[in-house]
Image (cartoon, rainbow, N blue to C red; front, side, top):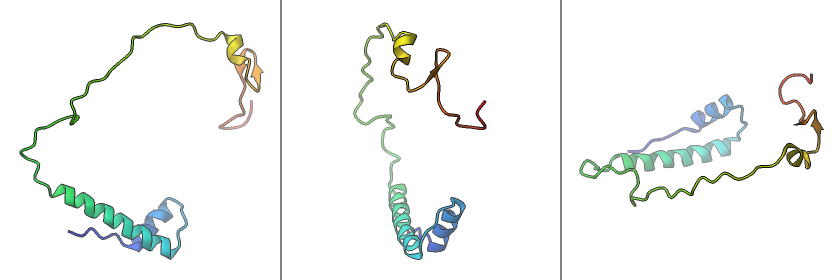
Length: 100
């Protein structure tokens, strides 16, 4: 089964994502995406009804370490390498909105 994606569909999705593509790029991506869908279709057609359900094929278990409490940095140590600090806190440029 061939799952064909057209360059027009690729261009439409690119437009929705506000990406600019050349016609050549749309052709290339359409071909590549169609190939991916063909592979997914091949996998979908496999008969897996007789296979045992597994979460992991190797039966591994998590190997965890002991949870040992260790001393952390003091406030002074944490702020010692900060480029800017104000009132005992890291000072960073505003990300959203206007500076207060």
